[in-house]
Amino acid sequence: AQSVTQLDSQVPVFEEAPVELRCNYSSSVSVYLFWYVQYPNQGLQLLLKYLSGSTLVKGINGFEAEFNKSQTSFHLRKPSVHISDTAEYFCAVRHNFGNEKLTFGTGTRLTIIP
Amino acid sequence: KAGVTQTPRYLIKTRGQQVTLSCSPISGHRSVSWYQQTPGQGLQFLFEYFSETQRNKGNFPGRFSGRQFSNSRSEMNVSTLELGDSALYLCASSSAGTGSTNEKLFFGSGTQLSVL
Image (cartoon, rainbow over all chains, first blue to last red; front, side, top):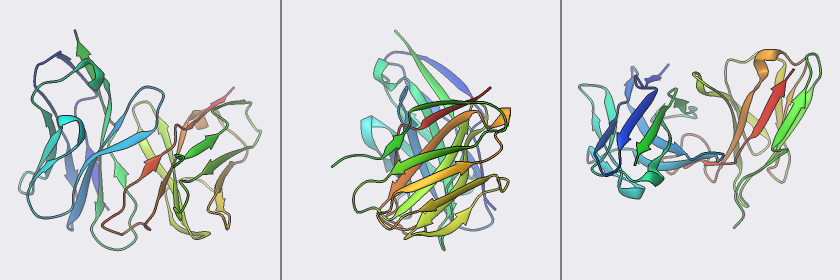
């Protein structure tokens, strides 16, 4: 079985500063990795995903994430945040074969300070 | 194209009652998954349906059940409600079944269930 750990439950960041949201996963087999964002009173939407190939993945809204197999990490980064980035961010993982479900982390609430 | 629609948006029930939540996926999507979201627990997978068949199931008690109709609409039922069932229940649809590399989940806004 796979699992995901998001160590930071809340991250406050000043507007236009860089941010990194951490995600570590555990799995005995190869995985696909995802980041989803949930804006207030909305469902989740996909930010980016890693399936294979280049370890640096670029997503929507200027976000990117880097897959690090040796560190079993998939941290999300943005060089300069906006007020509109205030949301909850979820990292998710699943095995790259079969009909496996997505396993989500507990989420990181990103708050942008003006 | 309409998004994933969940009804009702809010629901208040008392302990011991049962509840049915509805989810209409994006047109053409055959896979519907349900998740329970609570503060501090994140999203917990309930089950996934694909073409009217339950294909995956999470670690929830038998009080939680679901079904999918031929038009891909799905319902989730919780019987004998407990206080701990208070949560946001999210439904997600996908054009490909779980396991496809093109899988992308589209989420509804959820049903906020409060059990008193």
